[in-house]
Image (cartoon, rainbow, N blue to C red; front, side):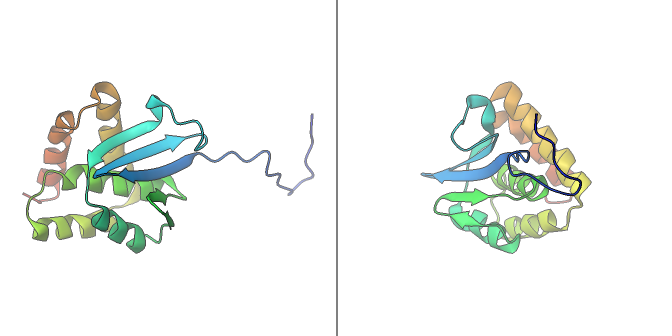
Length: 147
């Protein structure tokens, strides 16, 4: 058993989850796992077609590090915002509304972002289908007047 002095931190005691978006082809995969080496099916929070340029713009706006085809998140709040954007963006055709969505995502408070991201994750885990997320996306668009 190891004891730490008061106020001292040990790197061995700190375990942060690996939170990232991996982009391959035209698909963005949202991952949340204990380490990047152990990616399981249950590690995937969402898998959706998305434009890499839009995700990069949002990542740069949120000051997120980008490593090749991977966007790494230091906190769950920024991850939730990106998850909501990717899910709802798929249902928008107009570039003007997509821009409005991006700025809306940036203006959400952390509780709203957490709520909507939780709804998306739960539906994804249950059905593993993007089509099943359309109702949540529609509810989000109606709530924030994007339609």
